[in-house]
Amino acid sequence: MAAKSRPRTASRVAAVQALFQAEQAQTNPETVIDEFVRHRLGELPDAQGRSGGGFEDGRAPDAHVPLFARIVRVATEQQDTLDAMLAGVLAEDWPIARLDPVLRALLRAGAAELWMQDGPPAKVVINEYLDVAHGFFEGEEPRLANGVLDRLAHLLRPKEFPGRGLPKAAAL
Image (cartoon, rainbow, N blue to C red; front, side, top):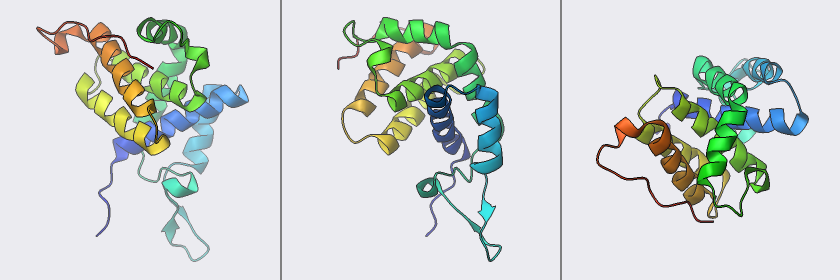
């Protein structure tokens, strides 16, 4: 039985990878978006003309390109603001620069989607990035990402959490 296609999740995975690549290579995000669209998103035919290549090959064959590009653009255009907000919800002794670079890219992508007021509900965004985190990490990082994005969601979208106070600070 084939796995159910999740284009929006694939877009988020690709956005985390693209943000990581842009930071590590000190590359313009538009260049990275272009590279991903040309070489890593969608399926490439193999030598026999069959479609192939998935996450295990560094590809996101089902990714929804407009969502991918929007996440990367918002995350980079608003990076200073989003990083300041992330720093405000992280423990004081864990500045954003101290985070694993993949976790940093994941938090920036999640923060960018929460920043988009016309995006999916905050709980959907948090759950999606929790799934993405589990794809990259086996330790405590998914729990940290969940806590940080939950606190950020309360700050950016308080109307989606009526009657609830701000959750406690994320513990590392």
